[in-house]
Length: 451
Ligand SMILES: Cc1ncc(COP(=O)(O)O)c(C=O)c1O
Image (cartoon, rainbow, N blue to C red):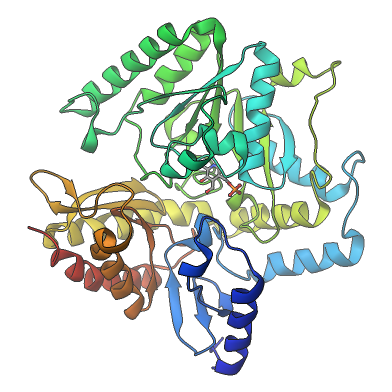
């Protein structure tokens, strides 16, 4: 579809937004949201007719791209049939979505509790773990993001927690492995893995194993930097959880549903958690939906004892119909396989080639359609291109990179000193190459800020 310019309509959208919409995570007077006129597949466009290739998949959720016709039709059909229904009833779309998800989740994660998104999935997973173990505390990683609600943001490791952190939310934090910026002075992945596990076990010992309900980790930390856990790390955490009777929660809100070239990132590592949270890709974000996949033993805890939690819209039929259609489309169109294949053959090699030519690229890491470029001022010292949590003038090099990418028709995902490459999982080879070319141009701007 060719975008039709309509600047007056765009101005009206923008004016009403600025007058009445209160945006997430923002100083309201300092933002300038782009008015979006439409979107299709891997692209969206504004009211001036400028089109962008979306390497962010929204907020890493449009795993099948925008406006997939089969999923749009399924939503329309469900709206005509049964738009909504209360959660206490058995409803076809809800039952089918739960069945399709449970068939794909690893191990015995066979019961699905539906939420409205990722943060509330994390809230409920933690609540289930606390009730199951009778213990109060949660261990989470410093480099993590788990959502914006009160408990989830307190589990989160990034600076968005700080203003919400009362210091009394039953969370203790540890360092997960990340060789490029190792907290353990490691030189190899093997060392990083062994030392991170030793550090975690020491943390458990000093926190008191009998006080710890859960360890929560993103299978591959997303917003915090797409750090691939070294081989053996997640299996090692699984062992520690078993040893100390701790519930293992994997957060697959961002990494799940095809993003890594597997249905779930846990499949890359052959690990089965006790609880697994999901959202985003489950229905490509077409209608808000998240959930917790629950193992048999935790489900049994609530066999005859009521689970003290729920939501009016748990398993909303419209959202569940979108999930059913999305999962079926992903299977029929080989979208998970596409992410794996083009991740290996196009994105990975393409980014490596950019890294070889651009001194601002410190590291390339990722898998499938889930990659990060770590941008640095100095490759030797690994000094980040901008300081941690920089804003204003201190963030100017990343702002210049972002602006350059947009000038070249690419909407980039930018977080601190990194750009993440997270196109839809069904992006084509031509689209990916177009995005890599735009990144090439934007990195030339980043290079100007290296030493
Ligand atoms: C790993 C992870 N967990 C939880 C969340 C929170 O999800 P939501 O924004 O749907 O509440 C996110 C969102 O980015 C996420 O990436």
